[in-house]
Image (cartoon, rainbow over the protein chains, first blue to last red):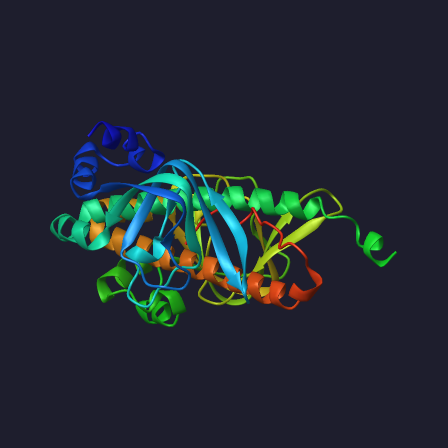
Length: 158
Length: 167
């Protein structure tokens, strides 16, 4: 329970009303993953939304026989967006633990709460949208920065 | 005010029920912007979320007076200006490369509707989340495709760090 209280300090919960935080706590499970353990694979349907509390998670995509690291998630990150989307939406990355503690939300367990209180569903989705929009904003900053750091084209053609 | 029949021809709005389209129609405004118009400017707060209907719109970032990066080219049906809904500044400019038709939805009115009818709020936000997922998927597939064609030239695969939101 103490661990669950720590989880509720994470950004995802800050925008939720306290009665909704309690409902999330009722269905959420905390799980520790060892280094190298696969949380979910690439291009599969999943039923769980994940919130990272401690440690790191790396996201990779397969390229032929190899794996390209796309991103490393840190505390507070939320992932597994496809779990809340309709059947047919699949994961974009393979998520691999680098040693982490996750809060796992099985969407089918939270659905009855949503069905009885549409405001809860709205607040939940809106929170996720806010987090993703802010992340997308950070991504844009990083993308521009990395593009500016590329060597000039003339260096490549000698 | 926009006619519902007009809204039904917009790709990402086809999934909405009739009542939702009526709400969107009441607050929405159709605009035709001329070539060269900046619909919004980077690093500002804006009051509308937009859906492109037709034309040619680029999402750009001016880095300095000599360098402008084209971040994206919009397709009909694309949402843009989503930052307005969550109250953060825009990172980009939205620039019309040719006359472009756009639906503008004022976020104050939209959020008021969301509060009054949370089911409408859920359905609307859900569409935006689906839209985000498609962007992430497409970007990732494009990266894979680009990398695949150069794989034999590469020793170690690079680590990318700018796909900072994860599907």
